[in-house]
Length: 128
Image 1 (tube, rainbow, N blue to C red):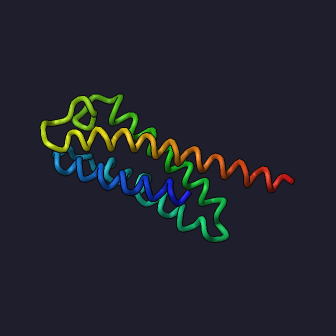
Image 2 (spheres, rainbow, N blue to C red):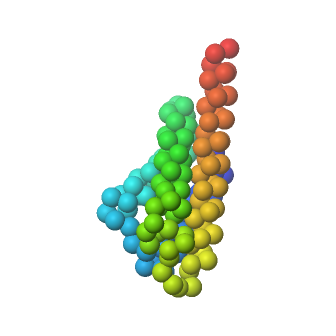
């Protein structure tokens, strides 16, 4: 779980840097979503995973990674906008943007997988 969250955070920061360098701005609601769901929620999930709230932390991680995955897939690959990987403004950070958009999909998929796997194991152990 720690690897999933910290890797995702690093790639998110790099992707944000590419956004800034290219001047690809997000709307106010998108900025709030990115901050709450993509940045803060996984970090809270990781922090709470070391407490008695670890089961809730896993659910939070699953929800945040799934929400991040859907958001990124839609805005980077489906919805035509300046945030779409095929419609970026010119600039040196285009490559970084495209690579980090793809790696974000991978880290988010990994986060969903890890949270689901651990939740399944915990549920199986509690059933015994």
